Length: 209
Length: 209
DNA sequence: CTTGCTTATGACAGTAGCTCTCAAAATCGA
DNA sequence: TCGATTTTGAGAGCTACTGTCATAAGCAAG
Image (cartoon, rainbow over all chains, first blue to last red; front, side, top):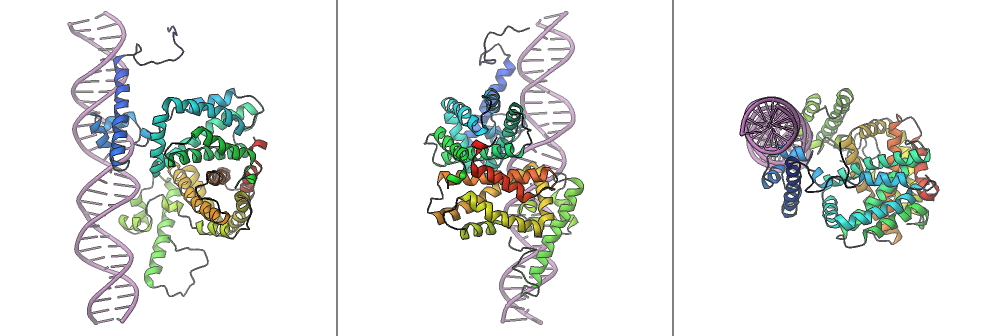
């Protein structure tokens, strides 16, 4: 029933109905007003009711768009990208090497497109404990997917302890690099920071600090 | 937060008054009843009010003993031990090596003394998302102390990115080992699991999965 | 245009975790 | 024993979050 004209599914202004467009607009409005209030008064000091009022919706509507207040900041649409990288990576390569090549490419692209927003979000994550916690949890869920994809390709079990440890370490190293980036005001070259962190893991901590 | 139940400092017959002893008893009672309720009905399904009633205190008193419900499970008195290990470790050793020797010794001791409770707690942490999050955050705070201690001894800056990345990775690797242990019913040799995880980091992920 | 279906919305009530205040009771030092 | 300090219980209140239900907005077909 569909003639696929474009490789990218949904474009703004597509023949999607008015309802869909309104939802997108509402979603954007909520996030925009929320970020503004966060900047002005801080994350904790901003209540959902205030966000709802600023976005001109009812508080209950807020939770139809974002399951929790934290999800305003943490919604992350990069997971499929990562999993895809892992699945199309060449055989016989170590996990850290695959990440160090593929993921860094993806990160470059993300920075190019959403660099500004990424900086805002990571700065919030750095400074709000609750967001830090959720971020780690969320990233670990991503890495479960990644280890499964990698395990399937290499014949290992997804419960392989070595694989899990490697994934968790890589995740932590990348997270620490990103937090360091945010701590220094998002001015340095994030790709290089992450690459250095992964290099340390690849060659082994014996040679490091 | 200092009243350890099963350690060296407090001697019976100490000059502690009745008040102190009562506080310790209350604290133990709260934890005991809470663990029982958690086992019977689950963590989320147990409210603070129920815990307070079971421990025969008022709900407001509960929060005088534990700042949050999560702290019931996560209160951790091993931090000073870790920092001490780092400070007394021989010079010129890599962080991962120091941990692999010193921390494993400490872990052995902990297992010997509190093994039962550690298993209970880690199983809870494994199965309750909120606890997992807090655990990671808490461990990271511990590792801030550790990196500071290590940095002071080696002349590095505590903001040294390599050091931070190493610490975060080691933390993640150990955490993953412990979670794997809990996932398998706390039956395997935890010390060996952690040692294998750290060995992987020490020699480098290039040789691993 | 109108009819009927689906979906989005708002108002409202309720729960749990957590904070704060204040007065009463218990404990302690002298 | 008395006065000072600490612990406690009671209760009000705040915020995140979850439900329910009737209404309203979009939408597809006749």
